[in-house]
Image (cartoon, rainbow, N blue to C red; front, side, top):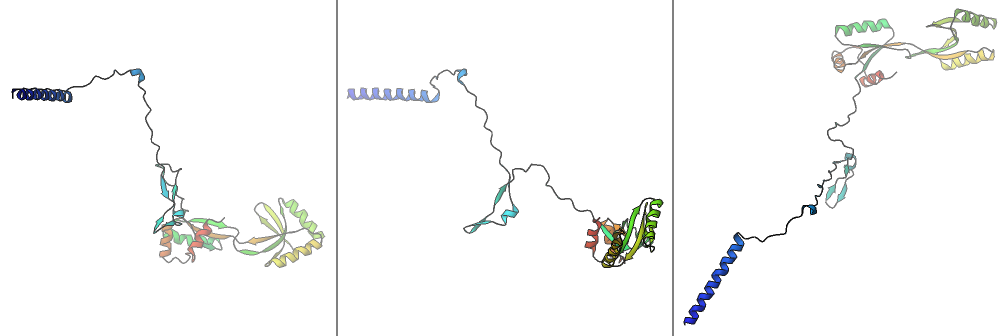
Length: 245
């Protein structure tokens, strides 16, 4: 009996000592490590992440979407040349311009321009020398001096040509031999002179037309609203004619 009691005391003492040793290790004990050698430390460079490319749906390709089962997959096009912060390129709008006319003389245009002045509508003027065709002229020239014109006129007289008149345009002079309303008649007249060994030329003559130009859209709208009698019947054509030479 004493033996069993002593054995229990020894076992309990052993368990108590074992428990205390485990508690010491978990709460405050640490095992010594190996010393660190600084020369063996290697510093690695920072990892740079590749920036993502901007991708937008291309409207031209998105209309041709590829069906995938019951869904539709839009085509995505990467925009490698997109620069952040730059505004999109927008085509500049064509400036506004409206032709009012034509007028057969500058006096007629001045009369109408006074009406625009009273309506406080700003305008510009434009003369178009190549307007309505007036006829087809057969002539000689141009001649730069009176002496040369006289010599050419005498030469025509010796060949029996007396039906002519002088035409002055700017610094040049011409000898007009005939003026016709049709191209066919002018061609026939030229052949007659060629058969007689007389060199002549042919051209198309135009009447100069006189125009008023409105370059402000608000002013043009006020002009139309007022019932201005010379407002163009076809404004779109009148606008396109503005940009023609």
